[in-house]
Amino acid sequence: MKELTHKMVDAVGDAFNANDIDEVMQYFAPNAIFDHAVGTEEHGVRFQGADVIRGVFSGLFEKVENVHWETLACGIVANKAYCEYRRTAKHKDG
Image (cartoon, rainbow, N blue to C red; front, side, top):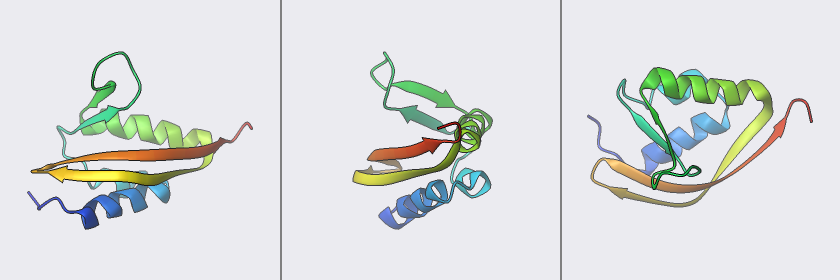
């Protein structure tokens, strides 16, 4: 596994901001976990597995003209990044 660095986290953000699902998915292992900030569980809504994560973000990219993530804070502990983002988007249907 590659060492997790802020440069790598920034590259993931760039892929998301390009709305490029194939580029985004290069950063997720087959057994990846993505925790969304919303939801009733302490970790929010959890998406498990690269196929599930691809489906979530592909759906988002299809619904919006463009979606942008602004990094507000990011910390790295071992092989995990804990990041806070502000997401803005405009839906294609207004």
